Amino acid sequence: MEKVNLIIFARRPEISIGKSRLKNKIGKSLGANFYYRNLLRTIIKIKADKRINLKLCISPDNALLNWPKSIFPKIKRIPQGPGDIGEKMWRVLSKNPNKIIIIGSDILDINSSIILNAWKKLYTSNIVFGPAEDGGFWLIGISESKKIKGLFNNIIWSQNNTLEQVKNNIHISKKISFVKTLKDID
Image 1 (cartoon, one colour):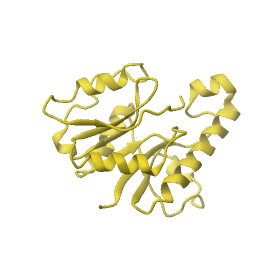
Image 2 (cartoon, rainbow, N blue to C red):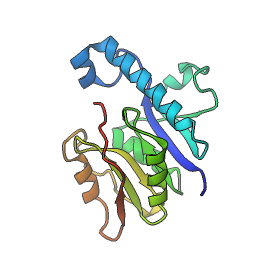
Image 3 (cartoon, rainbow, N blue to C red):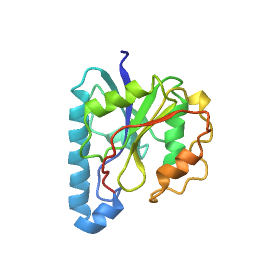
Image 4 (spheres, rainbow, N blue to C red):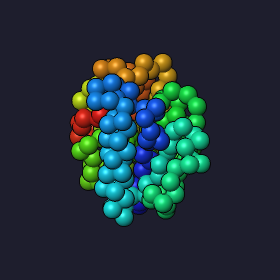
């Protein structure tokens, strides 16, 4: 099997950026610390599997300039660019014509076996999702971006039907598969 092409979407972990719902519950400092530790834990778990080629897709884009190079210096970092999460994901997916998987950085129970299972499913499916308990998805993989158009058009993000909205944008001729439902931390 070829190496898995995996991209983790991540934000620079700091008090003023990201995870606002979590930070509202536990405080900004604890929320930022939790996010950073979970991001590092996710990278360590995934990077340990040599069958996975890992990249980080970072937001905000200027975080590429001051993200500590000492932290996983061999992992390629790319900017997310402007737009909502759908525009950012589509930009990455469309630049990779072959199989690719994107995950978030906030999935506590992630492991490489789930990623490898999703990759395997892309040999027989056009799209694979990792459903999230809240109605969204924590993983999306596609086999060929040029065959999937309008995937994220008119999506209202962070809803309890986000996955259903995206599925409704997929042409009936496309085969969809799923991996394990997990909880993501909002």
